Length: 262
Image (cartoon, rainbow, N blue to C red; front, side, top):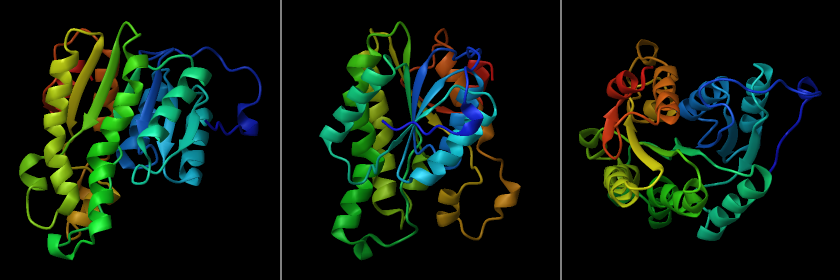
């Protein structure tokens, strides 16, 4: 695991405070729109972040933003979900256990969507990579980390899902197929962990101004859409609140915010 230090972080940092103080949280797709907003929101609540993404430079910039606000020093873990194997996720879990000593939550914010394309025009290898990045990879990461999560008194896994009617529309390709299946994974995993200390949640954001959405709605005025910050705050509220009953289902951001007190 790679942690990138900067001169601004030299010296002892004050102990973190906030609703997530002392907790270690993985955010996948950490440099993306929702992933970045969630990482910053969680850091503001005291979490120590493991920033997972494909490209190091955007993760370094996010690292600097978190530390610049006085957040706990994050860890950077470059990983391409499309090409990662089951062993890569086991290695990631081992690294977190060695270097962080614990894991309290995972936020699956990563997504791969290259644009609207007829299924017949998608190359077979591109189809399989997209299925893996959007469905298999979140499960393999979760599977590798479940033993560590299960040792915590309260652990949470948050999957970011899409509107079922939208992702099932034509030209969404493997992204739409994978995202259509994700709520079933959430429900099944919840049912299998319901009597444990691991909480499983699906969160459905409202439309947000992100690069991913722009690939499907390129004629839309993104300036009229909210930023990902509101959804990020709702996710952080879910991570912090172990008392609410919102487990196993797919929650809209409005519902998640109301129940988590965001």
